[in-house]
Length: 340
Image: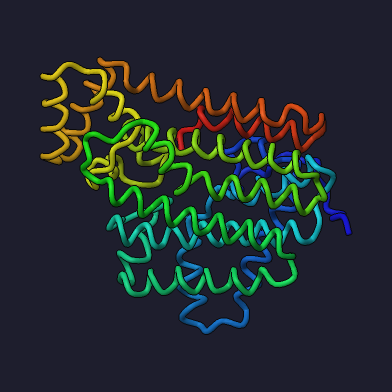
């Protein structure tokens, strides 16, 4: 049964998406509201300690990007159903679980402008809460069908695999751009790709259309992570909601640094490595950013993100000219201009 929810009005001021993704998800505003209600309502049979922890973890309110991609992909392929709402909630819950685990791994202290669960309640609570959320996902997959359940499972597995690959490459100053792209294609883009693929399948799309939407999601996800990595270097904490320079502190090589270490002269490379190894906080980050700008590494990363966005748009050119596909194009273009 097609959802009868209205899909017209602009996002309300003060909503979690307004100001960050202005207008991008306006055609699915009411459906996103249903997703949020489903996520909150599914906790009703949980114990009080769990409900309290989940409520705290959700206090910052995410951008709802992955649920939005499920819904827009469904809309582009024919329409949004109740199973789209359910699947959109699943992808958001998986994302939130990975954030809880990421904060433990990275020793994160704040996210979305509030202290992390691990910093307030300890690593044990954060890890177990993430596991609890993944358990909820398994329960919610019942009734979605084998194809969609497989898409969700593969996306989750690839996300974890990408994170593990990134951890294994910490401090590897020889990491190449293709290796970096493969890492973020897993740790970030896999959920984008899966969200789009699942949305298409649930709308009854044929195989070629589903693959086109999946490719769109992969390219958008890669562009999103490259932009995120740039914001870690040059973003403002009051906008990003997390401390700048976290990747540097954890010895994670991102695209601007990979470009610098590949193209700069030997003396410049050694200076960059010295800054990276000393971890001098904001002063070290600012010095490194200056060198990245001098060598054109910041602009190179921006250009590569834009190239992935353009490739994403090309892949869905044949999907159709409708509100869903137009919003997907708008979402892709917004990726590289965002500040949070």
